[in-house]
Image (tube, rainbow, N blue to C red):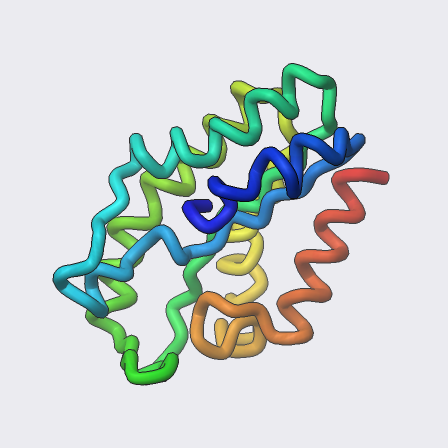
Length: 158
């Protein structure tokens, strides 16, 4: 969400949209486990960063759809550039992510937004297929993962 902050007025608010979907990713979570000197984003800062663009949209009557972040317990080590993410990093990420998922759920309630509970959806889906089917690295959806998100989104809005 930090990347959106400088652009929220021109890219979102000035457009006066009828519907806005926010797919909250995991970029605001866990980076400090890969770069220990990295900035740790508190739950309070995370929630405030999402509330700032959502509040004026909700006040304007924009329909809001929040897609919570997710983390699947994939096996082995995933590589993202020079970063290697293994079971220990994912465990730390989960500890950081769970309260932020709760913050997204609270933001949905407070702004009367639709919520797509991606974390629980993917956890449930992974019980029959394995987590890698939905997100090979645990965080970036595969084509099947994107299709599942799209189908869930459509169920919310139709």
